[in-house]
Length: 347
Image (cartoon, rainbow, N blue to C red; front, side, top):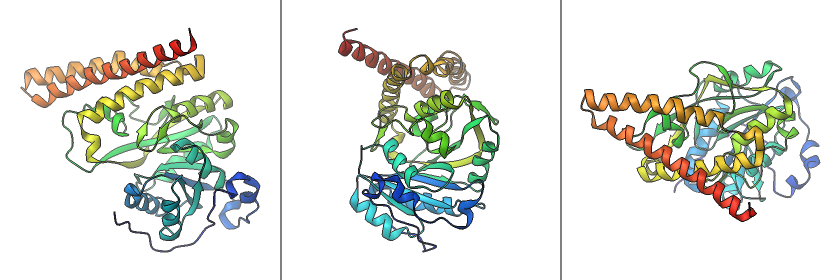
């Protein structure tokens, strides 16, 4: 795949994997100008594959083009030396980080966060596009001392036909905000790491993202952002804040618009929730998921069935079916994982 770069703006410090073994090496680099202000923001992007290098370039450009730009954009590359070299050469206005530790998005974000200077860390995915005023709207709630972290809205950017069978309640499957989330700014249990801002001190208070837990490559195996949010809330006593005016577009490739992907994603989400519940204990109880399954989905099912019968709309019947099948797949993944864990532990 041909990958384009960005026009050169300014060159920050490239971080090799040997540097990351000693955070003091990074901290000793002089920081001048805006780094001394009370709120210095580093945007951290994790990347792992050449398949998304054009998306990555677009994500970087959207971050540095903000009306209130960040101090820096850090791109951490997950165990891919060739991609790291490409980022270092083709994206001259970022700090490139060569992550050689445990594979996974969480571990890679941690490496990026270690290399970042900002006292505010804003996480953005390599296939996300920050909309105008995204960053300012995302970090503003952190002025409140009771807010531990902030997340924003994600809108799908379809690279293929929009799947008419996909219900709005299940847009989380493709990494987009879904029906059932708050419509206005409000406290929330957790946000997504593709569109998240936290204070550096609070982030490291819990050790960052849990390593070996979460997305590896293109596969989402667990809910590492939910896990982080719950642990940070417990450690700080603060709340997470959903700010819908902090908008990103999230690219959805055509391969993720299929019923097969839908089923796989629901099933793995169920397994991830089971793992999270075990790791976090009582704090990992799934009240939000139960509320979505017992209140939001039944209302949606009723809506779609009514639409299917009263307007003879086949798409509505498909969406109703998808709701039932998706809930069943997630439940099956959850039960399978719990049974599997019990059998391995002999409990």
